[in-house]
Length: 340
Image (cartoon, rainbow, N blue to C red; front, side, top):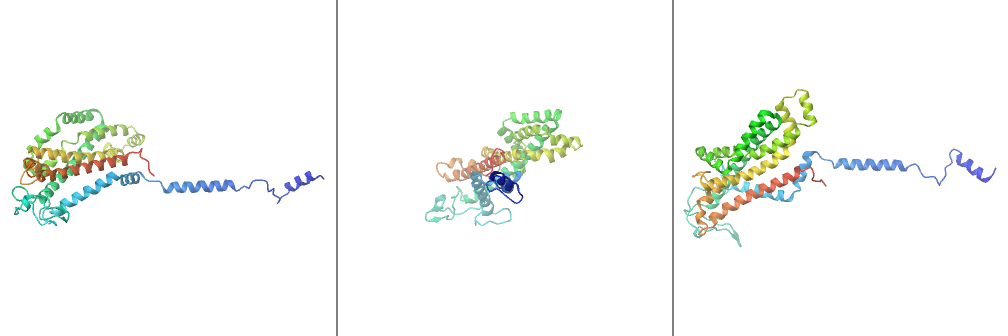
């Protein structure tokens, strides 16, 4: 037997292996590597709610705005208290005090001190810090009440019009158009004057009845798109009532649009209340609001400018922070945003 035949026979014998042949362990290593990659990706998967929350928490401008807004709310409600609950500030917005420093603000940055009247005093001796905090309380209450009521009305009308269609849609949308063509400030002023005897709550309800139109149109557009989806058709096929389909299947998918526009309603509401109070159709004395303070002391801009600037600064802070929070929510609900 030749040497070549002998080597061929040895390689064919059981138990004999050729060192030049590749080992059979590579496919197993590849499978393990793929499984590890899948496990790593599974650990980084998030639900829709978790994605929205993480995106919002990573939005720096929104987080700063949220912190500033919470600080303003806490300052307003803890300083002078609410109703029978006292605050940490020892002065009242109704009482008169002796003039200190000619009524000018006593706050100093160096050495740091707030003094007796950090925001100064008005023309008759009232503590202006307490007055501004009371005005901030009223303005915040009206803004959030109007935003909540306008969101509810706009969502209900938009969802009903978009899903039911037909005569219902025609009636609701023509009513919406009627509210839109009337100047908002004029309509709010007329209704506010009619509800002037109802106090702050009545004013908030009236304003909530006129700011819902934009949200209603947006919700209707979303519902028109969603009502043709397969899951809605399946719900209709098994006999699910229309109200249940709207509440359980359609509205949860429009939540992003609703939340973002609710924040914009809050910002618009505080500016609308400011304008009405400045014109004399909003909050009425003896109570006060930020807009009413600007209206009452607009003539003091050249002699006592702090009476004009302090409420203006708080209006600006509240409106800007709410808008920044709305921008953060809009980006958080945007599916095109990537998660690291």
